[in-house]
Image 1 (spheres, helix red, strand yellow):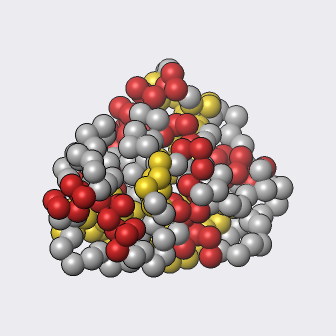
Image 2 (image 1 turned 90 degrees about the horizontal axis):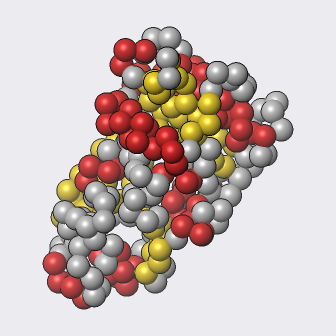
Length: 257
């Protein structure tokens, strides 16, 4: 399937973290009651019921991160009384409406051996969360110049029938050459080949990226927020866990989804 995006219901994208972790990415899911999350060295995304109750919020408190907070990317439910909102950035979700997806002969697959270079590129370009095991979520492609990784993009969330394009970044010295556009088209091609539809998230303030994605054929579907919140200490204690210090999955990790 390479001729265009599939026509399928988009409701699954209303809660993509939950749809991914209870669907194609269920093997990654760490669960507390009805709350599921990716391991903290994989992704800050998690799955919370659309209308969480007090028990769900109590379970979520057990996933508090190193700074005592819990990442809430894409979670639209208001935080309960007593929780402190520690981070809140407006974001957008875009969906393939006719991307000219195509393979790129110069794009090379990236895997676990490339993670140090990928993390270095992410640290210099700050496209959003990319962690030591994020590469396990899907196919990643890169472009190299004289052996050095200068641009990359890959796959992250996988709600049924869809795959998110993420970690789109280019070394500052190589911007303006269309490398990001080439990689997005190439990653989208791989997604389409599986019969799925590409989509993506970015900060609402990243107007340059939004213009690029719209020019490539993505359409704005909805607004959402990338947030983090700190539960009351007593909620964390009741959940029976100390704050998780395995990775920075709180405020800084939800910057752009």
